[in-house]
Length: 338
Image (cartoon, rainbow, N blue to C red):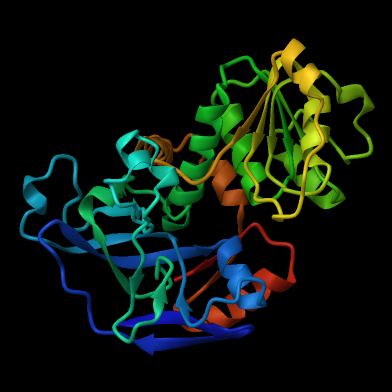
């Protein structure tokens, strides 16, 4: 089989890899498509210099083989099923995993290709092996939608930990791909209104077309202050935490979803947090219950129109270099490869 390996900044190649051998509880997936996320872009543009590496963790495809014990496992897929899949494995035994907080696993399980190349999902490939328990059936939907299972599970995790309830007033800082998924999910779950904040006018226009009740740049928010129950920060930029707190009403929550540069600090008034019962919540990755919810949403079609809007371009696996070049050079939502 072929698998894409990023070998350095701006350099990617397809390598021949032996077909994976299945364990008794594994399944073999023929990859239909894989989305390029921030990690792939950072590997390719050199800001995450870990080489060589086989990336790709937003993948979906059909089951083409199953291990001998899979049939006895409840809820696992069968031959021919279209599945979305979790390609990032947790240990299952550390304190966080045992607490049900596997997103914060202390010993995440990596992997390598046959030549020792680091695997970060390795979903940019013709086939992948994955534990059956880490696959989720989604019915018969477009494979590009199925491949959004992983980022959607992350957003389900974010909204779940926020304490969101139907009727809440929501703002989202950052109208890129993850911001738009927050918009779609909060609309589907009954937010009373959602405002989107972004520096880019085109992104604001597209967010409004996707259902945002109002949009604004970060310097146009005087009328928004104190008017939200939850503010999701999907663009981790200096000043975003302070801005999000200003947008919160009493008992509001700020959810830090987007990654921040490690040297970015926030200045917040502790007394204000105390007297107004404000919360600042960090969220990271996803957990199995988030995957199950995301898979159900995908299968239901509730977000289908929203997800279709977020596919910027499609490439074949053999065109992965062109796909990555587009992803790092243009403002895109998701570029799909497969």
